Length: 351
Ligand SMILES: [Zn+2]
Image (cartoon, rainbow, N blue to C red; front, top):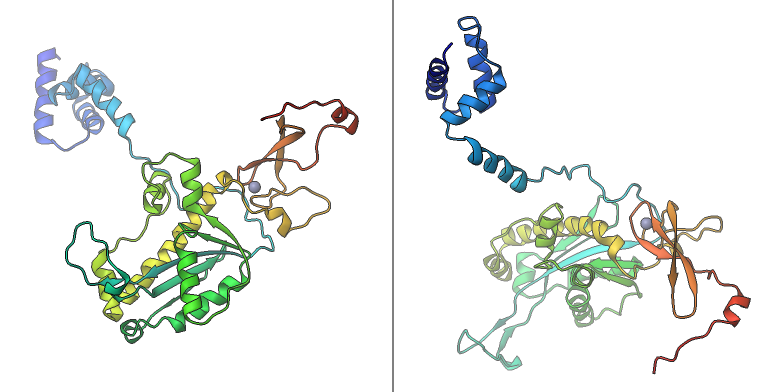
């Protein structure tokens, strides 16, 4: 078979099957014509020498196309069974993950740009629309939402009691921007609704730790989760949904609750992914006091690795470890220096 004949044959096939993938087409040409033209070269030869040329993918362009593919290939990282740790260590700690949604505050204003709104111009202040919370590693999500009538009265007294009780049981509370938003907002609603302060708990504000440790373009939960290939936030229509809730729309309140519940689930994933970077993490070792083994202060696991590397403060040496379960690093409490060695240790004066 002459070269021009081969070329013509491939051209015809390309015209008849424009959508067939290059390699499939080359295979088809080869299989269907090998009997007629026993000298037909290999499938790979047909693909490279003819199909790509006919389709305009010769040389540089072909290389560029394949290079692009590898660069912009979609990450098909399967997150369904992915866990950023190997085992769920059950500590005695009650770790509560929570998120709240509040109504917008409504005010009288003379304009829309750069307004300074006086408290006397406020028509209705914000209140709690919904809340959702879950215990770490447990499936159940606890939640509550206002009824339409309650929202019209701006009365969240019924639902606020539930989250107050959960906070009373919690040892550690995780929230995104919890230190500046969720916790102070809840405290306001507690005191307004004549509830005492809940029993003290430790806080982990994921926003704070993300901001401190990383340089992401945005520290919003949705943006960070997109980068980390974690589940994304549920979409909602934005402000109109909040206005509908404020106006007592039951359907909107239900949608708000769904959104809220989803947020809590997502936050759990984010927390588990970043927990090794949280410094300092509340010491989980204190929730499983173990006399025989050392525990990871972040997750409570006993799978610790000693890398033979030492951590030096100004006056002491400690051996470091990393946790094989959650990936966090730390140091032992007991110093590596003897009393005799320390006696001869001198220190500079910082001032
Ligand atoms: Zn750990």
